[in-house]
Image 1: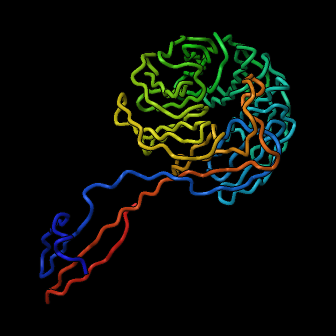
Image 2: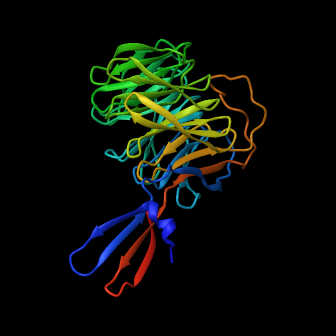
Image 3: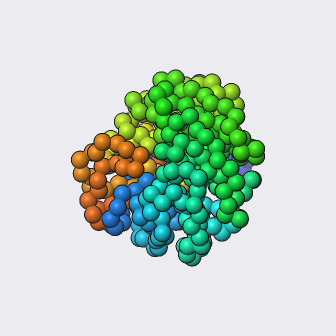
Length: 374
């Protein structure tokens, strides 16, 4: 039985009709979620990794591995398939409406098109720029955009005909890109200070170039489509937050060192930065223009890229036992990895809150039941 001195500060009484009274004891407000690495799987295989892409079901994670793409079951951590003919692969874009996937092959200057269900290669398409890095499928226009790093341009493919439709120049090295679902695509440009290039995805032309004050060499980019906010992670341990309608910077938040990817969880109003120093920064969105660091989660050195499952709130990261860091180049941005030592990490939050329901009956007998809230 719970002592009255413990209950008194937390009790709420509800008067019921009849001879029963019920008292609910609960914490006034749930505590902040506690994030931690919940699972580690050795996924083996040789080769470095780059972008991670989660399919709509949340059960298949596509991981680029330099000369192939490994497909990992997120429930077991097992590699369930691979996509080949992807020399120097960086990114993967998925088009569920077409039952197709697309890879950006940095060393082949091409896009590999594959069947989304069977993973069989359909066709390899040459593009108009060198070293395609990020890749994005935009369903409204039925276009695939490749962001060609050393080519300093963007190739636009018709996703059905598999033909290059346009080439758009960029003012520097393009990095991660996102779309707003309403006709605009945003891409980080790795300059100092960094920039965001705005693309009209209907006209296939540049619309604007915005400077990111206090942000050097931005890489990862995420978007809040409801509040129209862009989240760029930058060298110097900075996340820059930009109004996606005006280009005005609204905030800067400290993050870990060596960031590469960003993600926005609209359901929980959280922004993530995966950092090469072995940390995951969790930023709380208090309002469209107010942010604070909620947690810094220890992960593992080299876990710089990630994928967010918007349903569960889990974050997936890949890393390995790493060798000495090389001089960075577009083709080799990461340290060497020990063969067969790649790991998949799953980060989640513990959010259970205990409460007690106490029912007082006619005879004064007391029964209590403990439970948890999600």
